[in-house]
Image (cartoon, rainbow, N blue to C red; front, top):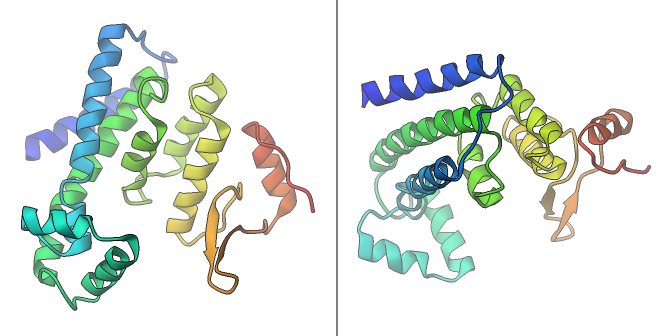
Length: 219
């Protein structure tokens, strides 16, 4: 496991340095198919322990039943699990999180290397799969350098400005920092509806939106 982690980090660092010399490597159909399969495996691993942790169950048959609950019942189960009222012990959940976090970090490093070398893969992989893998990581990994790379992908035409803005602002939310683009919807407990928040600095937001091809917001 230690070797695998070091090798993944090496791939990521190598990708960063190589990109300074060349925009992207040439991607053939064979490479594209190989990368698609690799990302699909990442998606499977992304969920390896998550449902067990969220629903507080490690028995596969019982877990399947819990996953078939209606949305309201499933949400209540997750709340009760989070409060340690039902399900597996806190120690078990913590142990599973250690395993899942390692998988998430490995996925992030490898996927970042793929993006750096070959461009954002949304032309052969569903965008939600890529964003899910990326967003299931610590906000510290999705740092300024990472978003600089993604912004370049917008400029290259490999990633839409909207998808970039969604990921950027979600990471800002995770860091408890102000959004920049204001494209994500949030649940308003007062009106019981979803809303898009108003920009704190409309001028800065509109400058940023124009840079990635989004329409400016009005007062």
